[in-house]
Length: 400
Image 1 (cartoon, rainbow, N blue to C red):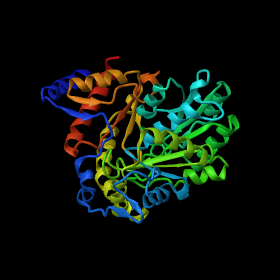
Image 2: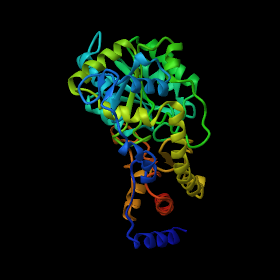
Image 3: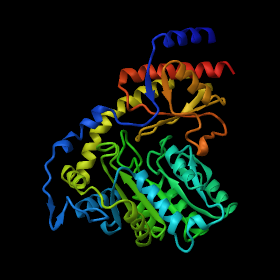
Image 4: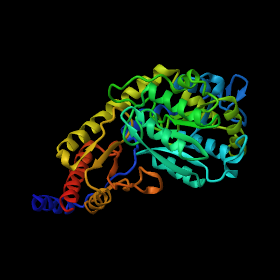
């Protein structure tokens, strides 16, 4: 069996492929959906606000209302920023690190953070930048393993918060249940009244198949009396243009003041022209939902191609997640061969996200978890890439 697979692998290598599925990026057809933004006329004044000038550090009124609609939070609790939810997350961590009350995190002995795994590599890089120790807890079907979460808090001092992707978790696609989010709030609040719940809801509107309904995170924070500790962020990075959309944060007064202090030092003012373009492009939540349905029609076939390919593998080789939204699929091999699979795929001309990337410090303790990002390439290339991936899994499994 291995001999025939190796023969097929050599045939693939001879094709000189160059396919990159390392990152979850929209393809050009998805970006085309927002091309109207590139030619949209914007009047220089929005009421009394000159959009061309400085000012409005929390965003223009219409853009803050759009964020309020998306996050289901009061407008007065919304910041509309730029770029990505990651940028707002970074600014929030920086604000806490430098200025948090009663003690700035930089003045603590070995501050720590809870990170569900597998998780988002850029979250890990952010925390590593600050020297914040990352403690992992596993994800289960409906969210964080609450028992492991509680155990981690009970056995550690100076745990400052938890970072979550509660809808279509990156990279395995979990959709947290309401009860799981409530449990996260209750357990974290019991640990400390200053515990930060940072929810990066980057894929909040990115369903491409029927998906479990969720009560908005901000509403659950209100129900559990944890609004002063909760921060929820999202963005249009994969809604309109990468790096050219809007980002939104819902936070309480104290956290708003902290991030205002940071943003006042590093961001003179947001791009109000871009904010106005977006609020003309999306008049409200219904427009966003209709727009994202078009994205879903483009993305869904690629995930279906990937699922179909992975189902061809015998279950002895491993298993995979089947998210109903977002941009990623997780493959977990039965043996500790993730790094070998990446190596074999590279030999055949297919680049994968590095083994270990979905764990803090790039260290997967079982060396068995890989992230697959099927969206950026066309369907024909994806079929080829998955043939390479399946072949690499078979070789790595059978040679050990």
